Length: 247
Length: 262
Image (cartoon, rainbow over all chains, first blue to last red; front, side):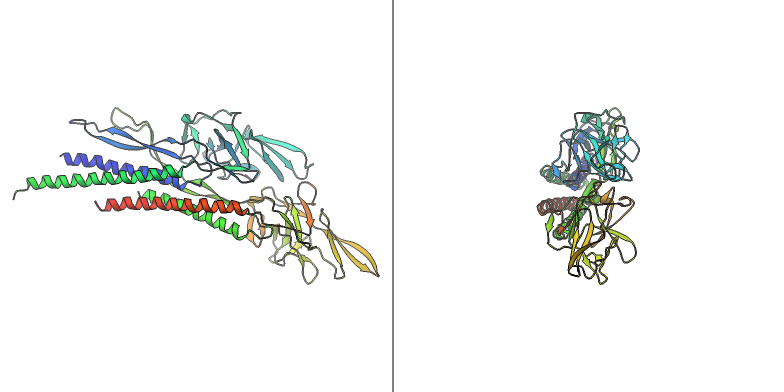
């Protein structure tokens, strides 16, 4: 009877290590993704309750949070590339129409609307930011977008809007299934004037390859340990069976 | 586990694409009027395997959920239209644009294309054509008797010729420049040519020197805007990221092999 129970504990270990491995693989796959925030994964132990003594605890793998450290700045010389310095987020409208936050500041102008490279409209202080035709854009450190328009007196600088920059506590943010971050209640965070942008640069991924590689090695060894446990259970049960065999 | 294998595969895929983009940039490091591209990545969808607050037993809940990503993908390859360096050639038909505009040329199929490559020549009728033989629009025809061509910074083309021993000059026309609201939205046709798309918007024709469209410089060509150092750094990063992702495939493979040996 003891075998089937302990074997399930070992099995849960094998399964959870695989999940943890996926998280690590996802972080490494996104080592070059603009503005990516690494996932942090850890185990929680869940005691198995039921009849008999509480001797067993299963491990459950969870993605507890994300790493919010800034990634490296990569200069691109493109005036439509922005990176958030230190803390803060760029507000965009997600595909669900709700406000979402990203650190990916590769911007484009599509059909007269300022969007990020994923095709999501950047949120201004009053709805989406409209860009008139033939405008050369400049983005200031506080998110103010100004443009000089060809055709009119080209030295006239018009202010077209200001990108909504927010900095809610990271604890209140969660990653959505589209990879964008939103507040846990789904509400919109207030604009924060302290958030600063750098124009002409993008922020790289904050995945630390060293950490992830080491993490992966340790997961591989944990995995081996769990499979070893399975083998041990198997041997033990075999031995028990032999004792009970009537020869 | 199978998931890890596929996730790492997407990681290798994007690095492969980045490699293609970098190679193409490096291959065009000396192409006149070439504009470099860059690949921008994004993460793929996440699957919420277990939402936070799932029951761990009848009395207790797990405080954190399990959200598994599925790797990365290319969001887009974007062309970067920064100015290339102007290099003097001394050839009177080399015309460079210093600024935003594009030359308009007529393609053999009757469509219009746009280019930054101003290495012009004349065809058998004396018309100004690109090095591939596409006629510049509006057409400019250089008379056979012409002894010299001057192109002003506003694009006005003047020809000088000797008539009865006297130098005389005639204005042949004006080279106009075309700007787009969103140059990265142009679609590249190869040979340094671009066509307009919905995303780039229609061209706005303008006179060089006015309204921000740029200036015309005779006797210069615009070199490629590829920065070799930047591309080399990209290449190094790229190669290592590729290796790291292949390591994670190996790792997943070893785990699977342990399983199959049970």
